[in-house]
Length: 184
Image (cartoon, rainbow, N blue to C red; front, side, top):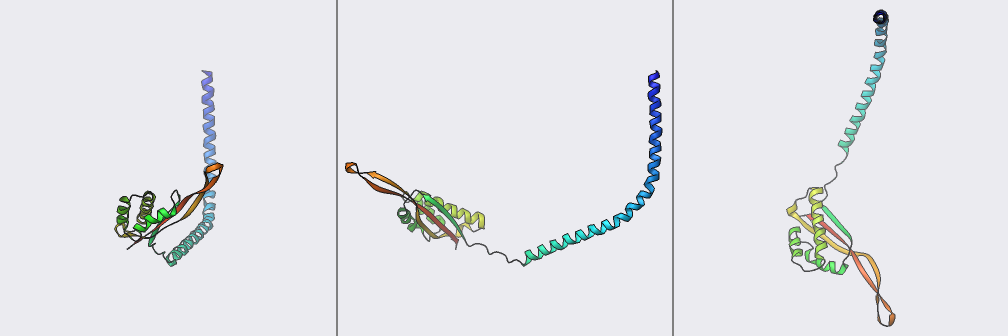
């Protein structure tokens, strides 16, 4: 029981000290409240100046955006296939069939043509049409193939064994395919 009395005595003494600290804090708080009010006024002015600067910068940016000329919408879309394992001459024979045609008509022609070049050229035309529709918002129905061409790509040099232990050269050609699609 003696132990409990000691703890209660300690509690009461700490309670008295806490009350004294509160009284001192109340005494100290009164003058402290007046001082920050005087300090807040310059801080408010500084904050207002910063806000004005930020607003001025925002206005300048808005003016620049309004003054900047709008970029014209693209009228064509392209697609490129590089190093297609196909000779340029064989590709050009098929490309001549679809040059200047509507995209849907060209895809129909390629579907009914029996050439090895039809598959990569079909993929390329579909890619150019998708670029036009998705990236530039062009109308799918009015697209046509404005330009289509094939250039030389990488050339792989191999050799072909010949009679009496000799060899002759063999060039395996690749091609770069290009398509430009426009709206009518």
